[in-house]
Amino acid sequence: MRSQGPDGGFHTSYDQIGTYAGTQENAETTSIVMIAISSLSGSTPFPFFSIPPWIIYLYTGLAVVAVGAVVTVLVLQQRKRKQF
Image (tube, rainbow, N blue to C red; front, side, top):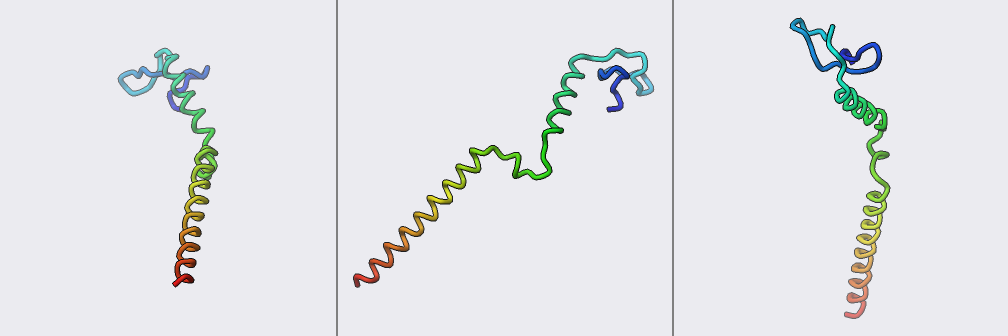
């Protein structure tokens, strides 16, 4: 943010003492900085909320199928025990 000019653009050139005084602002650098800043503002304090919904649905579905498979195996094992 130190290299931001008074009109909003960002400088990429520096003089020998490390300041950007007298240099022009760069449109490419300004656009890259704006993209980086906009991606930071969309972040949430809880990473869980940034997960796409389809991933949550997928893993929930897989968990339901896994629980169903375990219950099915347990029921089949109980029936085998009762037959003997």
